Length: 261
Image (tube, rainbow, N blue to C red; front, side, top):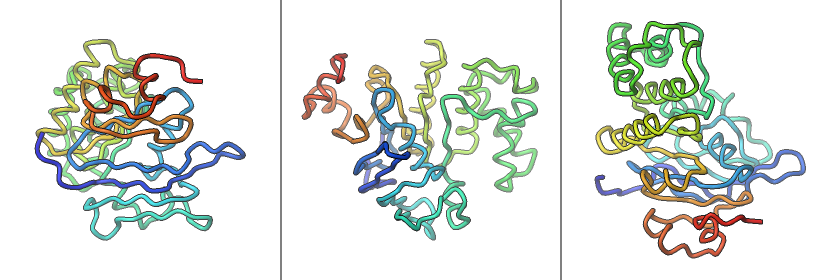
């Protein structure tokens, strides 16, 4: 991986409530440009909510998120009581178009597998011929090119996850946000996904934030690891430091596979 010189995303003081429950508490997070940042945590820790806020699909109650250099005209989102949802604010549309958020159960559009990949490219003004060429190359890399002209609803869960990766490969957004990307994949699919993530980082210069519970996956692909527990980032560190010398006892216990109560 090339030298990292700046943070693409900086999160400071982000808080989020759902009713009386505080899901995220004073979140501080740095996502280095050209890196893979893995957010580890158990069920209910707030990982998906944080990812949705980073992807501008969910508004935070408080805090600031800075996107450095993605879209020059829009770089900072500051949340407060009067802040509208960024998903409904047209000012943030250029920024949202420069990121891709893939959920554990990805949205599949009606139509062919190929059209599911070309759709985003054509929205961005790419000609149909170029969109199909780029999409077929992405589907080959994702290992589902033979399904290109079949209806997307025929895909298995694992194939649908690969379709999400193919969309990212075709679009090549500066920021890729992945929610439990290997949850429905077999070992071969997981290896393929991880190799593609490394390719997108090393060869395409993309930045990825990956949410997972899989400690082993984090060991294989992460540059930085952040541990989210009970709505707080307990610690963030380079991968080797995180796993070999955790500062917080809760991190040490999580890495060791112990139950956190």
